[in-house]
Length: 162
Image (cartoon, rainbow, N blue to C red; front, top):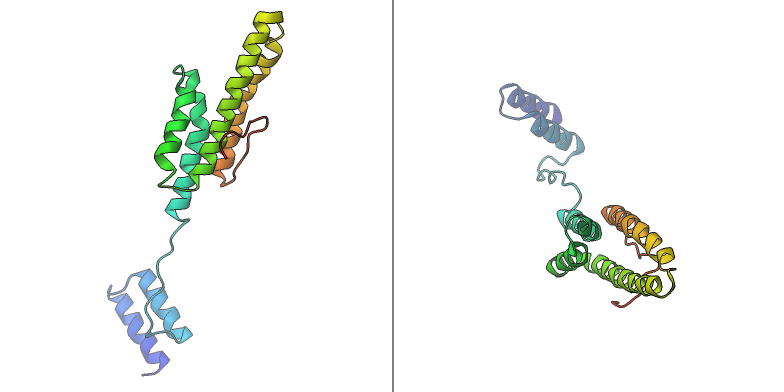
């Protein structure tokens, strides 16, 4: 059977409803490319779900710090819990969890220093006000970068967890 006969049979099958448009297009391309006896290529699959899930959970870990504005202490606990739950299942989340925990520890230390300085000489506001502002900005930046697949180390963080 030559190519013209195969294409004619294929057209008849398509016209009778035996083949969908996609199946017809694949079979026709296979005949024209000389790969008619080979199995069809696998269907298109978007970005791997593991990578996508890793990005999503990493973003949740970063943005979890903002939960403290709604529920007291949730911003300290939620990122740690999310990290511990997902770090073994999604290894890419581990580095994000460590970065966030390092930042939370640094933020607590800077806050304690600011609190002591308020009591001692009133200069603690020069630390606490900027700390409050970057405590909102840094998690948002980290979450956006994590969603893009980037690892962002928080500036001013203290490396406790490596």
